[in-house]
Image 1 (cartoon, rainbow, N blue to C red):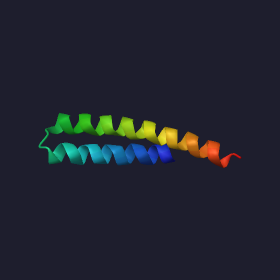
Image 2: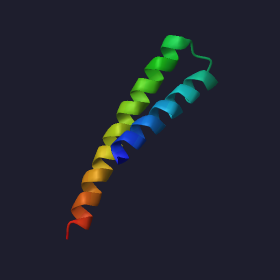
Image 3: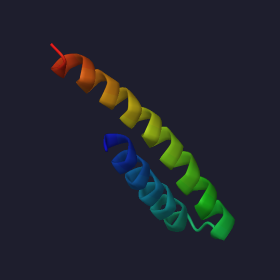
Length: 56
């Protein structure tokens, strides 16, 4: 669930940032996709780390 939450947060953050910088529709889509992928990878690492810590 952390991965999906990070994916959504990254997509929202990327789209807001692109809109704020005056991007067109394709710019917004690219920023949303890029941020979503980056945040999803961070969420994956967080999930693995939490699993290792809590699996004691």
